[in-house]
Image (cartoon, rainbow, N blue to C red; front, side, top):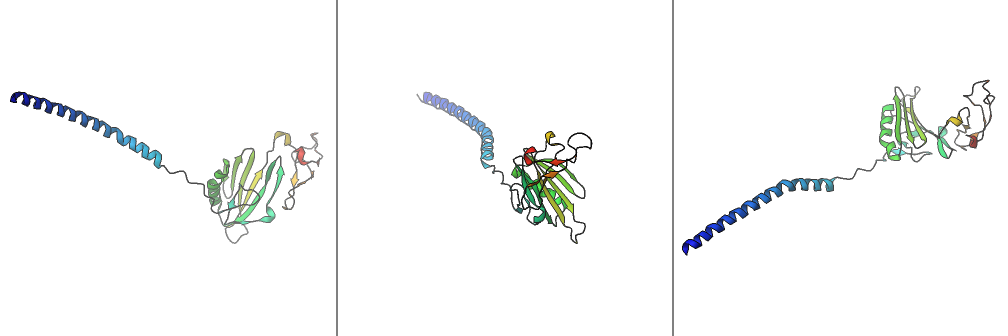
Length: 210
């Protein structure tokens, strides 16, 4: 009888050891997998949303999707807009103490949030940067003011409507005083060569012809 109880205890001890071994193995596997799961869960849940585009330092004239630096002064006499082919086109002009490089960096950071896509750029003493949105083209042009005592730069923001093959040889000149934004109808087709037979003598063109 005592030996029987001892054998039972020995057998029970072996069973417990086997149970603890399996439990330790399971916990080891769990601890191996769990950190990866936890890290993925924390990373997915903890990623901050992208910051909204900054519109600090922006001013607007004529076009609410074409800002100009607030530190620059708007030249109202050289700023105007008009309607062509269902598109609002025209120019915004401003002057201020910014370099061409600073202006280029400004538009690189501000224009994409308004839906503009960069297309081409050239820079030397001046900057010419072209952007598109659908069929509309925006051209950013800077010119240093040579007669200025300071290092002022003139900024021109040209928003252009589509100009297609059917429009070649035709021109409509618009009122640039900002008073009406209407076309001046008496025009001469600049690109039509003399004697080409393509209405080279000039004429009047209505807006709907273009």
